[in-house]
Structures are given as structure tokens and as C-alpha cells.
Length: 82
Image (tube, one colour):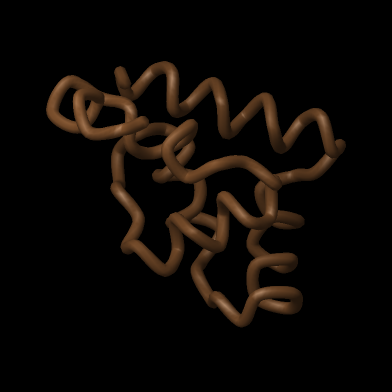
């Protein structure tokens, strides 16, 4: 998946919930025990940073989406996603 698509999926999911990036970071911490900075989350949305597996799974859980929809469909892993 192109970085642009991941960026749009995350931004759209966040906006559908009427959350700011700050809200996502707070919910990750409070609800899932994942502590990241608002800046780091912003970089994930921008496609500048790739989150660790724990962070990626927590973000997927928070948005109730399969991790593959957000993080795995790209040219190198598309063949492996069922």
C-alpha cells in the first residue's frame, strides 16, 4: 500500500470519530496501555514513521480495523495478505 493510502485511511478513521491526534494518543495510553507522543502519531499518519508491531496493533484495535488494512498492504507484503 502506498504511504498516501495509509495516511488517508488513518486520517479518515480518526476524523470519523471526531478525534484529534491528541485524542488518539490519549486513548492509546488510557485504553490500551500504549504510550506514544502526539508528534510520533502524527508522523505515523504522515507516513514518515512506521510503528512497531505493538503500536500498529493498538492503533488497529482502537479504530476497529484489521492491521492489514492500515499497515500491511504494500508492494512487498500484498502477496502474503489473505
